[in-house]
Length: 166
Image (tube, rainbow, N blue to C red; front, side, top):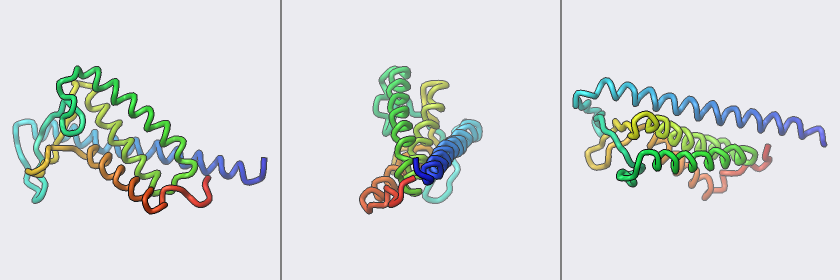
């Protein structure tokens, strides 16, 4: 063991704590907005914010309502397994990933966890962002899509791995 190994362990541990904290914070923000939307928009109200409207909707499927006819338990189970795999991948990737890649992984994981927790109660995900030309979605969907795009961009530009990994 060299004198640098304990510092690496601390750095990896900090990065993992930051990953978990970021996932928890982003998921909490999304779940809070879903709870607000469920109450404030429940009477069919629509709030026009320019390019985006706030309009309450529910999705029993996953992306673009795929699997909407499957039992909720199947959707929950498969989604849960995918999230566990993603969490293990993110946990391990922290060792060599750059900050942008770690943030992208946290965003993807947070969005997935928030949608899973939302679905666990009644079998549907609460959506509240509507553009008029695209299916209604939520902030967790933005986290997943934005995180995936950022991760792909980081990978294509070589910015996904730190030069001196922790």
